[in-house]
Length: 217
Image (cartoon, rainbow, N blue to C red; front, side, top):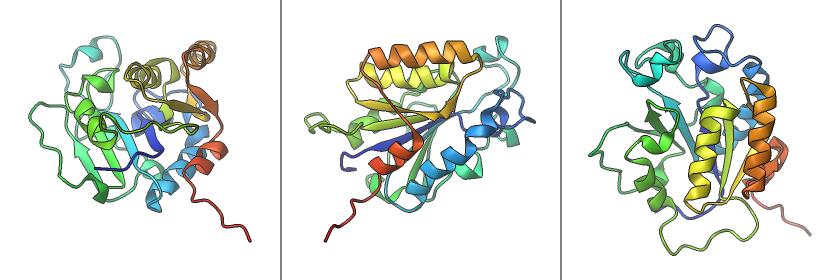
């Protein structure tokens, strides 16, 4: 069991979304890479768990009827950016019957595959969350349990945040580490999430949440 503490959650920080050459590039997404790196540094240093939800599509996925082909399994566009990676990493596939390792504490990053906008359509997501925050564990009194970042604000970021809120988790959104396709819609989504209990913070504040306390003399 992983002890309850702030957990980072990066959404779709993949080549096809984040870089101008990507097949479904979110305009301006490369501008938040530096902040994403700052957040992921905390996981690379072993200070926090990093969850990454990432598209892993097959050509016949229903989502590809509405969007250009992107993040096809095995393609370079489906890869996470190096700035968003930590190791050792656990890959959790989007299929039933996957057995979670007994000792999740050995991993610094967990990657959930998904083929819809909602990572909670992966049948293993809830089982994993139950392991890192089992029923009856006290919620954090002031700090958010999950810090969410990535793209796109009005799509997969929103679905991730709403899914966590519906399950009773406290969350924060790193507002300078998310990017929307439509900036006005993105702002409205953040306003709505805030009204429902999400905390809006900057990357600097998110990093402070997962930094070890400084000793004072």
